[in-house]
Image (cartoon, rainbow, N blue to C red):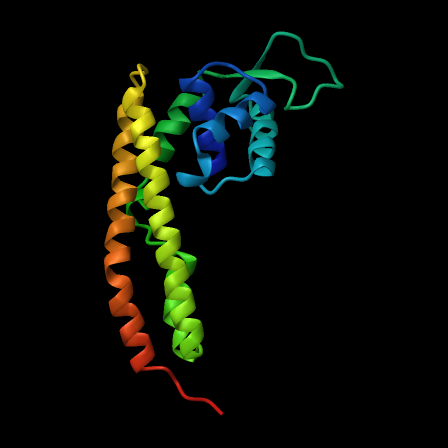
Length: 187
């Protein structure tokens, strides 16, 4: 069985945190700002819970009835899951992917935009990046106050994100200049 990113998120959080039911898992993922580190939706999480339970990679803990769905049954990670997690995380694909952001795609296509659209989109991107930097710095400040031992990883990941945002922000003026100088004229 090949584990998806959603599967890995479910298994990792349940293994690291504690057994919990789907609703509680979703709440934990939201508190951990899932959207900032994995592209996984709520339906994907619930689908993964069902799939992993069926494959016996998750074990029900406590009461289980036919009327209870994954949002009500408390699950823990079975011992069978750990080798699969380790194998999936050892795959080279994690380090070799270069998925473009929607803004990168827009930038590559923007030669066909109007000059006003280029200026507006670059300005909007700059505002977005500044907002992300500010939010990330606030999160860093909160994490640095935390007593939890697991915050060091989160701090490093957030610092990496901030550096990426700053690098992109520093290139926006040049990107705007190049786009405006090379817009494809169309009648």
